[in-house]
Image (cartoon, rainbow, N blue to C red):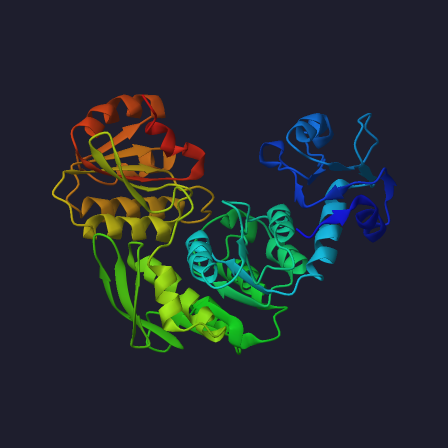
Length: 437
């Protein structure tokens, strides 16, 4: 963030200022506060940020954005609503930044797409991207405040759990280019159980971007095709503007062609080739050449819990459990089956949440695909998988009522050197099954 005084911020917000100070960042979480931050005291249903102001000061905050005066010896900017003030400040601050603002949304692949863009763009010029999973309106504000006059590329991941959330973030960050990844059944209860409604919400990411030649969407999604005008498409179907062919998944990379040009990424899976196609298409529209693109795609560092392959005790783990949806689960099962390994294979699958209509059918489809593979045992967590397993007469399916019971079963498998897939919704926190001794 460009250095600003509390008086300057107060004037922008039309707020009362108690004492003068200077800040170089903004934060809402005391655990993430850095030296010289402005700490925003957000008020939620259960937590009041004002109660944590002293902790923020102890961690380096030099000023507070508050909705009531605090008896603390530190500059304070007094507003009626700290959340609305944060949004207003972000909108104003965005106008001071001269950078390419890239927005990303979609049902699956948002974070991988963000990580790919960050890997390439940061090799060229100062780049800021959404931190971990801060893909909400508040997170978009925090990402904006990490940018300064030197920032050339700002990459904003935008999640969608409820109607109008994309609109809210677009109106905060004013994107100049965007990528729309896949469409999948998630949070459907909030979108009338209607794919068309969900698709329109996601496609709204392009609404305020004037130059549609910098707007790219996954063109294999029929709903997106119906909504598109001058936006550009990428995908596996031959009628896309950017066509993916010759995908080859190896032990350490995925190679493919995009409009007959050769590319490779150090991520695994056909779904990652699709994500990379959106990235490449956009970067080429921004003037990046293939040498720069390929260099960045060779060393992508993924945000945690997304298609990670690592060793744990004696086992090899394929871990993808930040969330789970029908398409992402089928994609990871494809990768699990394609990955070369001589180890015995096991899978741990936990329920997919908030699918709306067709929930039972989606869980059955996932089990059918898993049972087609050479997997020794498929361990299941959740009520939906318990219901789905009764449609199959297969002894490889084993359901557990809780993680504690599953944990005991897995400990021996970890020591025996097996290949184990973990996939499930964030609710289950499957990473806790692999804990330090």
